[in-house]
Length: 600
Image 1 (cartoon, rainbow, N blue to C red):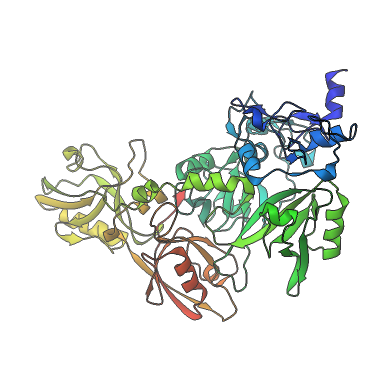
Image 2: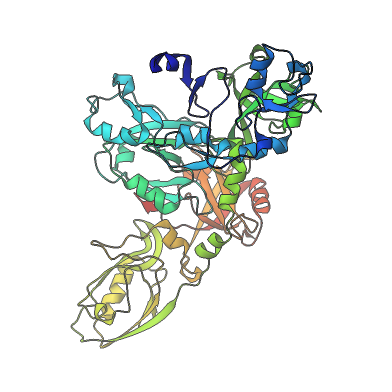
């Protein structure tokens, strides 16, 4: 039989990335030798969706079902056996199997080694070797190839300059859009990253007349999950900046925008994919219900002792979006029940769960949760970002009265990037300050000859520097900048630069919002004294469109909230801060520190 005929019978599996029969077990390339006790005695491979027989043996679900179609007996001891006599293996066994290390099957393009439970999401969202169609496929482009080759194809795609209808960004959903990139700069500022309290990468501002502004679909608060095939859900702030700054003629962005939710100003939405394997004779045990105040199907409760209750991943009040690939977002209980009963082997749910925002808001499988937590629970991140140990120093310079300082500065209150201290963007190495070798680009100037520059506008600070440049002795009080630059052009700080400045440099901003008794303030928070990274300030994670915070326009993603209505949010837990914000009515006065995001 030819390879083409083999592949006609054996389709490419989206779960394991291998070609196998639709009813065959999944195939994996294991990184290490697997214990024999975790091996199926039918296929001689590590167990997949294991079932335990009444006689104490364990096999892959598909292997055993196919075997029992031929012989109604146990493959090991030949005792009489039917599928009704089998039950799913324990959670402990399934978790051990989920943690087995496998090699990505796209070895020509990808060298990733990851746990078996993570492979499906890796193939779908991150693998550079995953086969993708051209983003102009709807216009007729026939290209299909590895994700890593997609961008080079776009340069020569015959449909490159043709425009299809613009896909909108839909509230509460993951959306993918394409933006024609006329210049290297997208014209946005970003905050967040997996190495920050926000965990995800979020748009803070959209620069007027930039590429994104002219496109008109993205908004401040949108989370960026992927750019041009590069996964940003686990990217650090600097890696996200690098990926977004990389120039391609068409920028393909996958984003998530939150939906305004009445009476739930702090809660967030998680989208989870959960598969339950049916066992003949045992009830699935899921009770569904509709709600009076809106469409959709929800989980009322789980029957004690049932398969769903034993599995433990579905929860009361989860909203069901899909069942076995069929959309039930606006369906009825009867339609959902019919779909569940139609497949005798398994049922796959895509559900929405409302929860506190301690993890990124994106589509993911539940098997990723434990590994994500261990990745982000490094307390050293808190020490790095908020140590407030920046070196403060005093510099004395003897100079001629006619000699200029030889530096350029930026920042100040009400500058075009917001309220910041005055910092050095460039130094003339031959100028009076450059010759000392004690200053660098990125240093913050606190005082000049005893006059404070904190709280001054850019013009006021420049005026003070020029006045004191006429003296023979110049005394500068400096805070050592957390970042610097040796390349050409002026120094431009990132959002992380500002997070590392000492509290003496904070410039406080007062914001007043008005909320009706039934409305939402329209923003979510992360951080707190109990954060997984270690004690953190309370941060604004996202601002939801068409809410009081969004319409006011002053509160931004990445802002540090110091107090609300005279209640300090410093040194309190996330739960306490969330509860305080949730129960505030009427006029809400906030004190925040707002640092500008990183430009890309």
